[in-house]
Image 1 (spheres, rainbow, N blue to C red):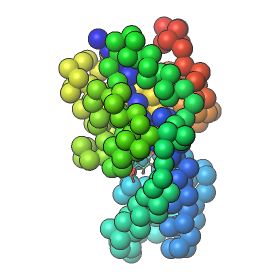
Image 2: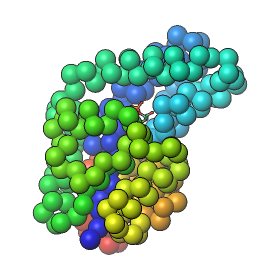
Image 3: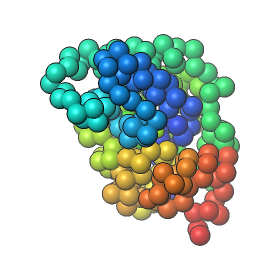
Length: 212
Ligand code: BG6
Ligand code: MG
């Protein structure tokens, strides 16, 4: 058997932009500089770690802030953005690749840092495809730590080498590689330089790409 382990935000669902917009608003409010380049470093990492990265980038100390309140604030904004999310926000190729996995007998796993993952899978009507879900509620170490992907392979009873990870973030590709899994970068190959292969979105996926 083998498994495809999918990241959620920016791979299956077009939610990365909402994380970006929520952090932009929070950064503005607290007078912290934030731009698209910095946002790349937040992709895939936990909510708390995201804030630490923003604060560090601005040469400030996390202790100067009421971190719990700021994380809640960011999540409240994010939840407003995704309040009415539906299947129209699935990214190109999502349904095709999930259906192809079912036809080929490949396990489907989620490996996401998000604590909102189940809600998004339900709202976008793809929850039923998943054999297992590992998300931000299940792990203690955020990507680039491999814990999220290792937990997925262990739960499925597979070897790490039998798993292929689909990721739009640098941290996620690093995590998958640390776990000795195959990696498919989703996005810009100039950014996801470490991935085994990179495609613009899942609609470009072809099983032949894995055997090159
Ligand atoms: C990841 C996103 O999927 O989930 C990150 O790429 C985000 O940007 C992380 O910080 C945690 O998400 P949430 O929904 O628990 O704040
Ligand atoms: Mg992502």
